[in-house]
Image 1: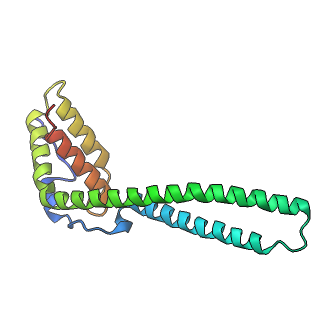
Image 2: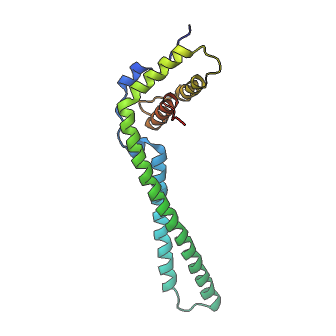
Image 3: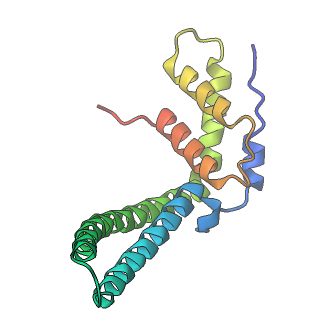
Length: 172
C-alpha cells in the first residue's frame, strides 16, 4: 500500500506559528486597504480641484468658464462614484476582516486535527479509483506543495478551509 508523504504533515502543523491578525500577512486584505486609501486620496484631490476651480473665476473667457463648469460636473460625477465605491470597499473590508478573524481562530484551534484527518483519509484510500474526496484532497495538497504554510498565512487559511470543506462536506 502506498502512503502519502507530505511536506506539510501533521507533525509540521504542531510547529506552525499561531495565526494573528496582521494585515501585511494577508496580501488580499492589504490590497483592499491600499485601494481604500487610494480612493480616499482621490476624493480629497477631486474636492480640492472643485475649490481651486471656484477660486479661478476672474478674467476668464466664456469658453474657459464653460470648460470649468463641465469639469465641475465631471468631478461631481466621479466623486459620487468614488464615494459609492469607497463605502463598498469599507464594508467588504469589514466583512472580510470579521470572517478572517473567525477563520484564524478556527485554524489555530483545529488545523492539526483537520490535517491529520485529511492525511489519514488519503493514506487509507490512496488506491481508491474514482474517489472524489481523494481527488479533491490530492488537488488541495498539490496547491501547497511548494508553499511554506508557516509564513504564508493566507494560503494556510485557504488550504485549511479546503481540507475542512472536503473532510466535512455540508449535507444536502
